[in-house]
Length: 169
Image (cartoon, rainbow, N blue to C red):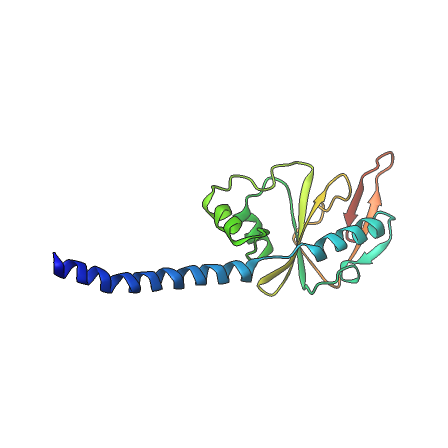
């Protein structure tokens, strides 16, 4: 019994060190994938003002963050599908415990609102902005695939409809 206690006392610090290292690695993953929201909100405001007027604009002229591609995420996608479409992993969780909780819960449908979609901007393997948009404000779902920084976007209105639809000219 005494020998067993001695082994437990020797193993406890090693186990604690392994747990701390695993926690630090996981926290590093969180901070590496976290996307701050301030720049996205400023972009959203400028986007709605500019494209809503029907002007041709390059999205790179409206952004204060660095990016080389933008993915339009339509409704009814879970998080894994969104990351595959964007080609990068990210999280919008504001805290590490929130990040852990989101990973533990099953994600059946992150974008389950027909009226919402996201613009996800990335540079390399890192997401630089995640912009949720109401399709009643501006509808990007007609743009398929990935948009690049140099591509212009135009907002058009259909006759008799208040909806502004983003298209490539």
